[in-house]
Length: 118
Image 1 (cartoon, rainbow, N blue to C red):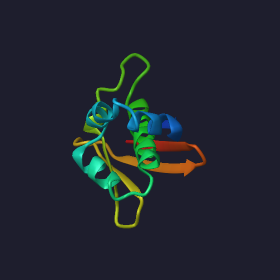
Image 2 (image 1 turned 60 degrees about the vertical axis):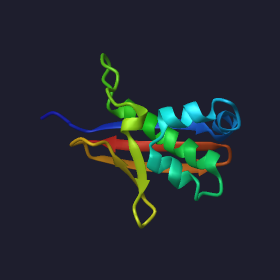
Image 3 (image 1 turned 30 degrees about the horizontal axis):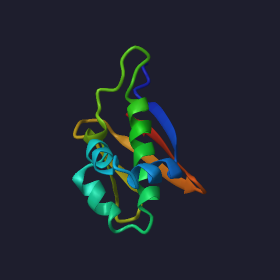
Image 4 (image 1 turned 180 degrees about the vertical axis):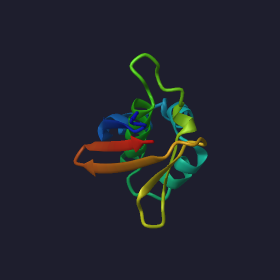
């Protein structure tokens, strides 16, 4: 029986994202990586660098989980949208049949995300 689950994990330096957000690369970075809804959600957050770091780590984790040893993920950063349920738990919209369970955490200068994709 074939296991149809895969996992992905990623860690991001919040200072690295903060540096990008405070540079001339900000708009290009945001438009390349994040959806309109994610950018809008960041505006309601106290710490946008922390918010975007967690979302970036989540997207990287999902891309890793949807890759194979011989084929990189076909998902683009923008095709992965991270949102929050009313409970606060993060969710994922991939616009396909995949089911993704994601967890995002922050501590100090780091954001980490772990996912399971079915």
